[in-house]
Image (cartoon, rainbow, N blue to C red; front, side, top):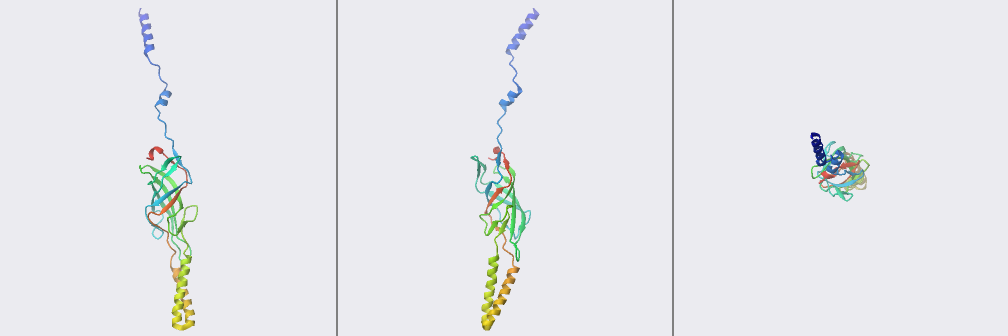
Length: 225
């Protein structure tokens, strides 16, 4: 009798106990789909607005540079870099204009990108173009900003000094004095041109700069907004 009762209880328990769910099935049902990372490809160009003034007259290697994205960058119909994202960098080379030759140069590297949410991404970026800079252009693939040549201005200074000398010499001693005055004036103008430096690179606050991404940058889409 006891054996029959034990068999009946075992059969009842077998009918009411649910079958175990495999661990792999549980994890598959509860796992949320992972957000795919977004990659900003190398060569991407992003328009920036400079947040501070920079001049080769006062700048030093290692000085920080602050800028802000001026327009959103869109990838696959999604905003990857919103307007107003902060871009931080540093000055890596400064050269003032020479007395006789050599133009002023400035080299900037961008190192990080700070989203409005506070999400920060490391990047490698250089200056591709400076459409908002006055009399300065990018001269090489590194992004070196170079001041335009002062040769025309210095030649004008020499010519102006020579003309002034000729006028003064002519007043003092006639035709002969005019020739002497012109020569003296030319020498004086040349000396002034040699003593004066070439113009400095000056980037005012708000200057438009085009940044080029120098290596692929991976961002988390869930942290952009």
